[in-house]
Amino acid sequence: MADDPQRFRVIKGGERPKRHRARKRGEAEVLTCYVCEQDTGVATALTIEMKQGRMVADGKPQGGSKVIYCAHCLSRGKLTRLL
Ligand SMILES: [Zn+2]
Image 1 (cartoon, rainbow, N blue to C red):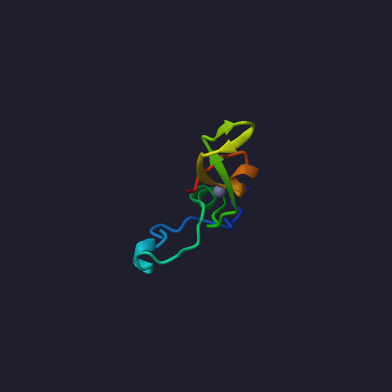
Image 2 (image 1 turned 90 degrees about the vertical axis):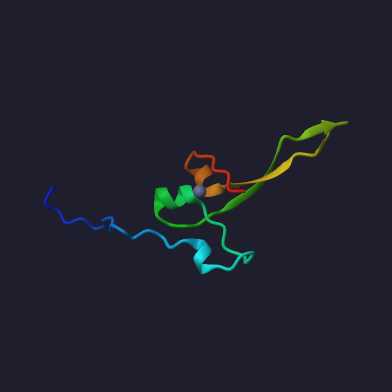
């Protein structure tokens, strides 16, 4: 068992390049989830938009601030707020 070759190994110094160097200021970029990237190694995100801190008046919801959570994390039992 211990002599089995490792299929995957961490390459030292192989950090992701900094995003601000690749992109100009104000330019659009793909929204990715840092927790998914840590857990699965894939920088991706499936997002859910929700509202936080809503008020109810006459049975109708109003106000609140929009928040974006990662659905991949949610399926793994985590709650990661992206924006
Ligand atoms: Zn995630």
